[in-house]
Image (cartoon, rainbow, N blue to C red; front, side):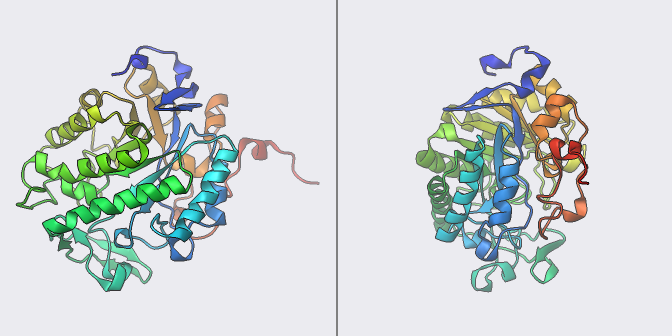
Length: 373
């Protein structure tokens, strides 16, 4: 645990913290949130610029998951970071956030098996560590369709996956971000390699945890060469079951990952402690994972202001990220500072659509503005 995690005042959630070479103005982080509102070609558009700029008072914004290649796409209208148009679209976002004094990291994403041929180049099968089909349906441009059995990546193809993340990291640098987060959580490609429920390989990327963690560690180290490790975060979800995920020994698997990440000098470790408020993760020893990593620990999952303040105050976390609260409250930091009431999110407008339920949530000043005559 770093020196600043000793007992601090309760207001510490709203005090600055050093994140590598960057000083964040508070410890309130906007979590990555898929909203399915990118424009044609998976390019960020004006609507997305407004959305992120509205939330620039966060200590740090982590963007929605952003695919590093056409093969990494798993949902309609999610942004990419693999074309020049996408770089230019994201540049509009970073310029707007920086103009308001904010800091923003891009989350690098490859969905692996959580896709469908209709979303893939040339209608090909999605790739995965092993040919194991997820349960349920995938959302496509034609509505929900059953998941397909993915194609297991050949050993010789894996360096090409690492190269896709490197290209995404380089493009994020060109787009003006302050850093990047490697998405190794929530049942997507890197998480599929990490966990033995989805990884049945018998080569150097499967079997014991040292092999299953190899791809994630190779990706993180390669991305850190582009950015400098102090501008790279990693997201993990050790107990998450979303996207048909499981592991026989999450404490061992993710403890090993945290230990291997520790010496790299990363910006932070972002941990999903409770996915979608399921409460399923209460038996996992999060403190042990935090201590194995040793750097800044960013907690996520089921936090409100009180829980977040307690977590920072007692040293459990250095920063806390908020998802649904940030959807509905662009000025979340201001509301926390004033102990003001919060807007409630409209779940029916989370995914896809227009500005409604996206950029039209009122701020405190708009709430308090006198009605027009």
